[in-house]
Amino acid sequence: MITVSPTVLLTGFDPFGGSTLNPSWLAVNALHGEQVLSHRIVAAQLPTVFGESLRVLDALLHTHQPALAICVGQAGGRSAISIERVVINVNDAPIADNAGARPIDTPVIAGAPAACFSSLPIKAMRAVVQAEGIAAEVSQTAGTFVCNHVFYGLMHTLATKPALRHTRGGFVHVPWLPEQGTPHMPLDAIVRGLRVAVRCALENGSDAVLGAGAAH
Ligand code: PCA
Image (cartoon, rainbow, N blue to C red; front, side):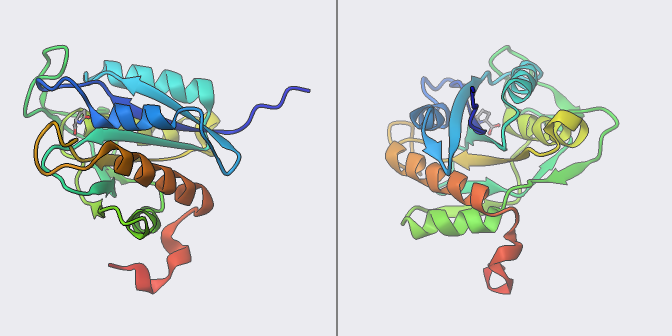
């Protein structure tokens, strides 16, 4: 009998905005193939391109039907691993994407709700990353560039495709690497932080398990 272990899908992005590397891809790729609580991590790269990134993500979701799908992106200027709470239905690009497109004030999904929430236990994840001695925060905005676009597309697909009704999903931003600028975080800290965050998300369906003390 062939048994297929359940998967956790982690995505990262290719470099953009003139950089030659993107820590989100380097970090998730370092976790590719690892087993966490009998789930196999599958890492994949998304293009930093409006539209095409969602086509690639949807194909991955349908192929793997993961227990968890966590998209990871670089957020220059942030000093902590940022676990995103909320995503908005807008594309408003401050720079061109990797295909030269710069949509301004367009919807990610026309006619869909204005915003939605991560279905990950964001505060529990923050707590376990901090317990590793790694800076972590809950963030209230994923911006309005390709990361927000992908996060919205992810949550919309999970909410509307019956085959994916058991998949929970969300988004995590990571800081620059030291060679990219300041503030920054070493790659091994980003990898360790993501590893414990994935484990925590598999163990905890929601933040309710933390009780009132986890409010801040
Ligand atoms: N960060 C960008 C897009 C790709 C990435 O890694 C963002 O925050 O939108």
